[in-house]
Length: 178
Image 1: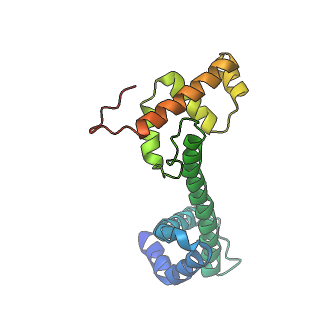
Image 2: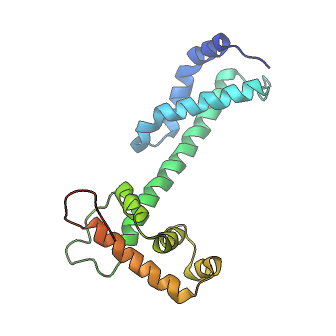
Image 3: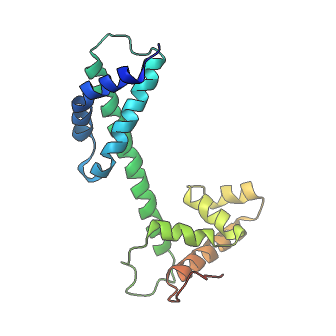
């Protein structure tokens, strides 16, 4: 099915209230910053479905778009929740390092800053840190990298210490060297 820009613009104009209602109803309040993304993804999916003739007029167009918007909002809730857990996971990951000085364990670390610091690690540490963070256990990492499990364990420990040292470096400038 061919759909012109004008036809689709008319559909958007006629249904934007329904789509926004679905998104605001189903998107968690603390993810309100993502409303535009969900609406955009809703209309993108709808357009692709219309072009591929997946809409069969079994329901009203507004009802169909409401369901798409609801599903996109639910999908975005999951995506943003996983991102939050990833950021929290790195904070916990660093807190598991026994070298954390007393009184600093409640300090919040910025996820993106941690990722930059991990990027500065030597490859042999960075690889193991990222595989471990992805949920791969030490034995499996050892098997994949063809190294002894003890080496994985020591590199993981040293990598954590390096990240912690970089995160707590008091120097000025971006010349963090390991």
